[in-house]
Length: 374
Ligand SMILES: Cc1cc2nc3c(=O)[nH]c(=O)nc-3n(C[C@H](O)[C@H](O)[C@H](O)COP(=O)(O)OP(=O)(O)OC[C@H]3O[C@@H](n4cnc5c(N)ncnc54)[C@H](O)[C@@H]3O)c2cc1C
Image (cartoon, rainbow, N blue to C red; front, top):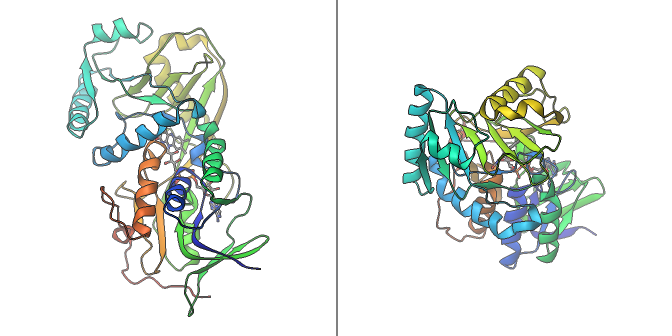
């Protein structure tokens, strides 16, 4: 028998799961369809940095609310509010840092500036080559590898049906009757009145099945982790250019990221680490914290992050397809997801949110996309 739902969410990353939770709390019958395991995409392989300092100014209200959600999640996701500093090593970087951080502070992030001496007193392991630094006491991190387990438990508790290892192989609008969508899964089909595409780097592939071409691009971000070492750093460390995120976990292992690019595509597998960019990331980390020279990297990996040219989210109705919605391309989305997911769910139910969404129609070259029908 074909199962029917009020809302089908495709993709069980942070976006899809938090949207599904809100819809279920509003009394909807919700199913989340996940091709792999919950949290197996970007939401489960990212660097786990929950930093307001590296968020875009226009997204700060969303980041503040998302950050509060992670704080409330606490130990279940390894949340730690360590504070973090962003470093400048020359006058050009200092100007960049001061300009960007002043704007972020105006947007609501509790960011202050530290002199090199104050920085050194706080974190002696950081190089003395710093000329300026900013500090945000509420910045921190979570353990992204725990995201899937955490989301699965929340969804179960909220009564959301979760179909894992069941990728949506087909999706089509249904003509006539109550309308809605038919979604094909490996073991059969299901029907839903409304659908949310929250498939991260794969969102364009699924939208294409509904006849909409979304100009989504993909970054192949690299993260690496070292063997555990003696405790040297309490806070997170970033760089004025945004090319570094560095933290020492409670295990003593160091986690290094910053958006250095590997290669590959979401259609071809997991992506590959590129040695030159890994080394570039590593050199910058070692420059920031010289004692890292004595620590060995034991694992590195890549993950796919979706984005569009204006670097703003796609969060709203899928153009030209009534009752289909999209939520993707949120830069810093691990932090922001728990804010924007519920906002999109509310909008799908006709409820006005207190923060604006980001209309996906703005990125379409043609205003009249074709619609596929069953
Ligand atoms: C390596 C890396 C490091 C990052 N570091 C940070 C960071 O430190 N801090 C931060 O805030 N942000 C970070 N980000 C960004 C952040 O991880 C993402 O913005 C966020 O996780 C995106 O969530 P999502 O739910 O949109 O996508 P995803 O988590 O990728 O979820 C999409 C899901 O859809 C599923 N799916 C795809 N196609 C189908 C289909 N046909 N049927 C069913 N399911 C399907 C996928 O399997 C996947 O599980 C990083 C990103 C990467 C890649």
